[in-house]
Length: 294
Image (cartoon, rainbow, N blue to C red; front, side):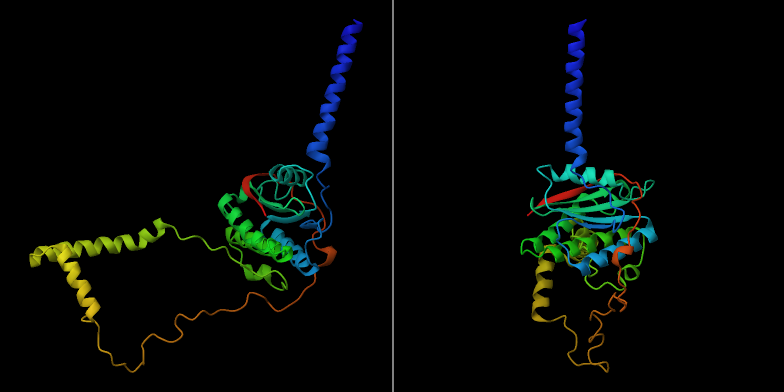
């Protein structure tokens, strides 16, 4: 009986030690969820006041307009923990995003570890997939490598915000109005070979069809016709008259000139600590994301 009591006591001690270790590994190193300025927590002092204020105001406007929550957190160090684990636990413990829609996004930067991660809630997985998250981090880290952390984080924030606004069909000008330090930026989608083929493919098929028909009519091979066409093109045979019409160039001039107005509204509303008070929506992660080192 005494031996059984000792064994049970020993097992209880082991369980307590394991529990304490797990608590330390998965909970104590994560900062408590803030109740003020909840959308920007700059524990590592990497942001200017202007960028911080812009992000606070725009994240607050985003929450009011869409229920989505875009959060930026900088920490000095993660104390040796993987950035994926740290970001996921912070995301879940803080409850970023709507509980029903799970539409939260976290941008985490660990300054001394030189690691960063974008964690995306399941509800925004389609808007910010892993490839997009990685591309956004790459643009941010390009600034980090020249020690411009402030501009790098502002760039990543702007790109993330734009993708969320597109998903919810919200006019970016409304959210960015009055911004002084965060410039609206869009992520350029890469041109894929399949996209090129969708445009060029039908035209190529039509051209081949015409060459085959002409070769039958003229009794010549299609390659001979192509060679003849190229020769005539190079000699300028198919060029039209060189005189100018009454429009002096037709559709020339400013047709292809870029135009448009700045998305900034001209106002400069301050934000201060009154923006972003309260708590997060209780969302959870699960939509993936991306990590980078620099």
